[in-house]
Image (cartoon, rainbow over the protein chains, first blue to last red):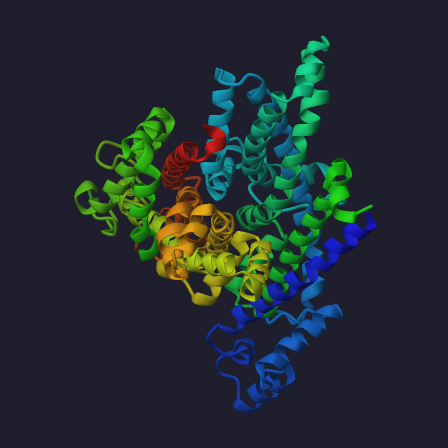
Length: 318
Length: 295
């Protein structure tokens, strides 16, 4: 188990190295001069030169790269162009918001997808199955920013039940927090619900035709017991892997929902640093999001190996 | 793009040699939903091509005597804040969406196939390097990577398409590599090699045509995703630039008038959802006829 975890952890290192190279190359392709961006168009030349020297922009690119990576390894992601605050501090401040949004979205997605997926597979080729599958496809086809705007229109503008945007931290006022998070979490969760439902349906179908399910049925076990205790338990395993893969999608969705609902999370920070051409912040937040996705996938893999003993055997050896 | 298009006849020739292309078409058409999706997609494609004739008004002509009009007999879907006809803008906006969907996926295939072939056919160092690179690219949240690339390239439809293509390239590379890895071990490749065929011939005449089905399926499903991504980038101001209509930028502009003119935000979203739904079900249909597991 430990060996498996360590091996997976070590595998992350080359990936993170390439991630950092991609980000660095990408940001350095941006036309224009970071020092000028920082000081403004009318900055005197000697001030520009001094800042370039200070930021290390007068050094060769590989030195700049090594300084950047070296800084990150020591926890120094650089400073924002906008307010000169530490990138890492700002990024970490935003994590709870995006974290809460993501967890709420996951909860909504699973609450919808599990019953829908189980029933669709159980009642295969009936009206229930067709409507669940059509609903899932619709969920996949609706752009999340549009769904967000429609919900704002319905619940904030028209019915005035919920605030259109903004965020109140959980610790400050739990009720208001719930009111500000429910719409964005629903928007984010609905696409995921569609993906999970489709995956669960197909893996349920596979499991339901397995011998042990037939045996369980033949033993005279109740249909519900067989469905939940025998079939669902096994069918859910591949779905967990999909969840890991979906983390990236979830974070991408957070960019949109946080922008529409004005939630002060990582996604909105990404968009703001793009608009503000705050490249150190953009580098930091993109690096962090890639790292977070990899870390969640690592955790998912480990959980997966705990649930499914076959993986453990293959991974860690005797 | 030329690679995929040029090689497609090879696919149909081979896949259809035994069962006939008509057989595949019939299988596809038997899936009613997929057929409807395909027809809807063709209709939207025609609307995009024939937009100047299909649209009742100019998509960019402003009319300050008729701003923010609700849907009615003259303007079926209403008018926007500058008095432009929403229906006409949606019809013209289909161009940006379809171009983005088809061209960005085409670019990604054109880049991903050769790289996937190199990795899968020659193995070794290039394979290792390319695989680590795709690992890294796939570990970015797709939209974040597209946003970052679009931010670097600057706003514009063409640049948004490149950004989407960059994000999708590793997906096609992976699929092509996996296909080549399995196909190159097949006996017919050994036979071709025994007959003295060069690598080039084996790749072009054997591996490529036999590997294309999953690429086509994946490509069709990615068109749906690319349409949404373009709309998202335009919504965030990084894709199609005003006054050129695109569904994403229409939604962005309409958002400010949500309480007065709900339809400005409603119709572009419906257009996106219908198009993406059509592409998704047609793609699902394609997958069903080619994927042996669903037969």
